[in-house]
Length: 163
Image (cartoon, rainbow, N blue to C red; front, side, top):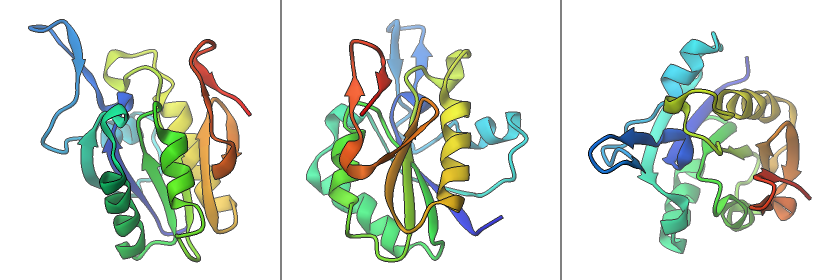
């Protein structure tokens, strides 16, 4: 397996149901569901590094700059970033052309991993494979498809990503 790291930023993948507020919430302590998702999938275990825990609807340019900094600092050249789906395209386009010789693949989920029947495992698994196979650049993997950074677009009506 190529040297690979998964950087986690929050998003729906890492949300859980709060029984007191009856809402989906993120843990603000940078706790991620990705290690459990990898364990359940019996995935070869890459390094997982939480860098923030944020709903992507709240993501700013400063957050994106922090993600870019993390991409540049890690020694691995194959990087998966878990990200909320609301602004995944904006982050992909922000990173595009700035990551040097690294292959960066963003992915996420439309349903939280913790709630079961989630697309998280499928999407993260696809991103892990894509990050090892694609040339340097920025991509997203969602719904069984690889998208170039410039093509990442969520269709809220269909609940999936399309070109």
